[in-house]
Image 1 (cartoon, rainbow, N blue to C red):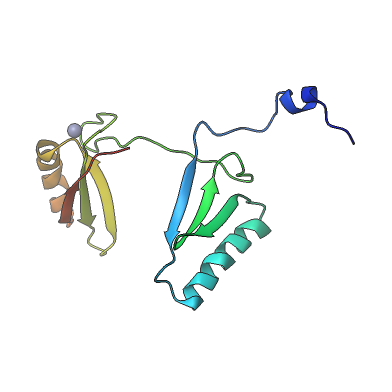
Image 2 (image 1 turned 180 degrees about the horizontal axis):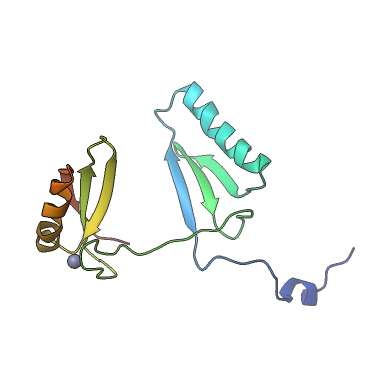
Length: 138
Ligand SMILES: [Zn+2]
């Protein structure tokens, strides 16, 4: 079957991403067993209809979550302050909380003052701050 330019430019029903992401794994220090599990994870996703381009090089295994992705979509959301809902955060405070059940959650805040306003409520429920990091996003 011949494909014309018109066929290639026809609007598609498929929802295309507004951006793309690369899930990049450092495989340089991975054991052979762990590397096999990584490939197996991708194979399992393929078996349930989720496909994407991938590649290996420079000690990394990359999953290209771009226009090649089918069977799932990428949803990228900006960081928002958990206290005042400010959005987007360019220099968020990443706070790693530990719940009473010892699960670890990372929430973002504008700055120390928003964290301090949130802290009493969490601590009353048995949560504690493990670590705080700052970082520039994107
Ligand atoms: Zn805030």
